[in-house]
Image 1 (cartoon, rainbow, N blue to C red):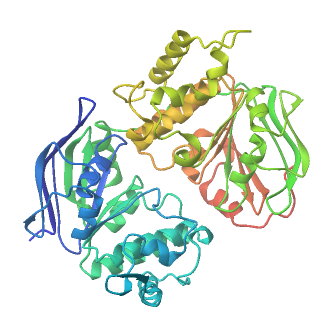
Image 2 (image 1 turned 45 degrees about the vertical axis):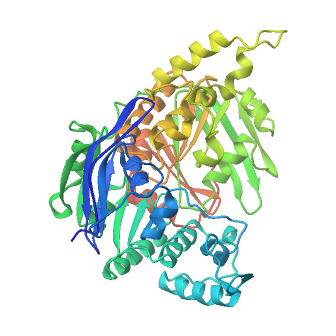
Image 3 (image 1 turned 60 degrees about the vertical axis):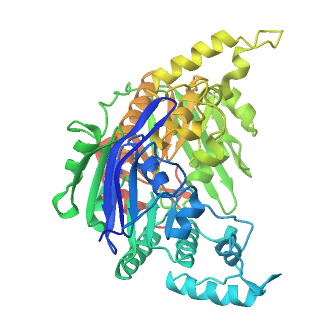
Length: 505
């Protein structure tokens, strides 16, 4: 008997059907892979299973019994847990408080005295199950992303989970944390816990899963044993066509272009040391490095979000101020790594998110009166330019979009300012191959228009496909530089793991 079975699930938003009769089934102890482009219906399907959304049609059974959760609490009581890409933990609370937030045990019946001893003992046992050597009293804010994910899994186990849904679980993890997660998934499989694994990293899906389902445009277009699948076949099913190249045709940079962004001996103790670099007009410079190497910190220093103790930063020969507002006025844009916390206003409309950085440019000179018609036309044009898939940009909130379309909005809002310098930190994190291709196309087009672009990415193949040059960071310094003719994934990774002997010139 299937642990969970869904038949004919349908769902519509704003008059647009996003699920077209999706079927799926999962057995106890099975890991089911779910792949598809952003907007293909993966999250909608899982939100129905988790009680976040109610289907417009179709039916579900859990252990052979009809299953129709009215909310996430119903799903949790039935033994279904959801490990979201953006973890649902309170960083200001301890591990044990997060685990028992919605169900503290009491010492005496009918008296509101929390049994903290019982909580601590049970938390220790749960942390041992997920191999997390942390104290129950540890604040979640002090844990790494991988450790926080283990807390989420422990929380699922505390509710006697029968089915755990993993949504892009490795996007913020180091390679060591990823291996630790995979080992835990194997342990959970042995305990006959069913799992649904959603990921854009197709090799991981094939490595972990027993069966793979492929969604496209809200419909099931492929289903097979993982042993019969290949990354190429999955990509073809996902995008509806053979993808000959992962990257669009590259704009050829002119041989000699003037410098736009310059860093001269920029340092901040404990963060970056003596960083010098130049990014020219129409050039894409990639920055590689392991987590903690200083890549993101360097981007935040350039944009004025983090301090620098020494050094000079210039745009077109003029020294850059140290506040984000003045940096923006100088023509610099920064797409942050965490689009949810720092890149979007989740409940605001798509149009408001697109317009936000550029509103002042559409105010009448001297009057301050907003030219709404001109702004609306610009926002609508930008939505078309980035090929945004949305039903109504004026009414639809950005958090109703898929991850890839949210990223297009974040990129589009900066393009509304026609930046001279664009800094991109993990621009395709957590989005599918089709959406990645479109993001790459936008980057190429912007470079062709003369922008200087700095791309930070954990994916070496992405940097190789996009960049004219690649700089490698290690321990806050540049350890190597590669030109297009010398790009080599193994050498780039090797440079990311070694201690620099001298600073970048």
